[in-house]
Length: 207
Image 1 (cartoon, rainbow, N blue to C red):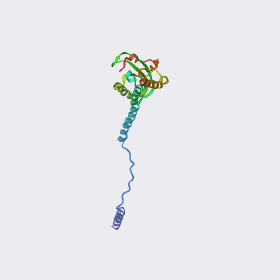
Image 2: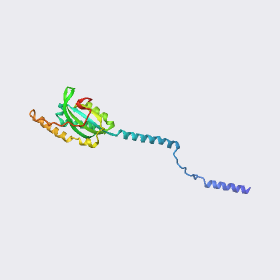
Image 3: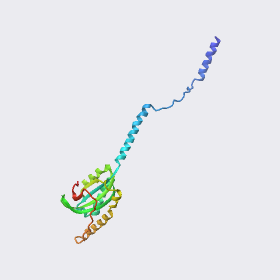
């Protein structure tokens, strides 16, 4: 009987000594649920696909463009060229080459105009911007007609060799001097026609 009483007292003392102390527990390792990890994979795939689409949208192409200016608009030649450059700049285009192609009689009358100045331009632009450039050309009050085609037959070096922007600056200056001199001003020098083949000859096919 005394032995039982002693064991009971020992258990009671042990219980009192551990009272108020938090039981020691081993921290559990934190693991992400398997379902959460699996769900993350499609999300990553979506991000990669979106990035690829974004890169594709920014791909650029070299285009050949012909712009027709009326003689009235070409009187302010510098302003007309700057207007074309502004439209291309709004479309994030990089001009590679620009020159006066010709000044000739149209195959048929367009909006009361029988003659036009042809400006040939090669530029590089994002594919997604082409529609905006064409729309601005159609809405322009200074551009009589325009046509833009994908350039695939010439190398970059060949296109750069046709650049005539310095000649455009010279002609703009001559036209300004001629306008200031009045009716007795000398005629402008004739610009040789470019030998580059184009489907836009004689004003046909323009928008």
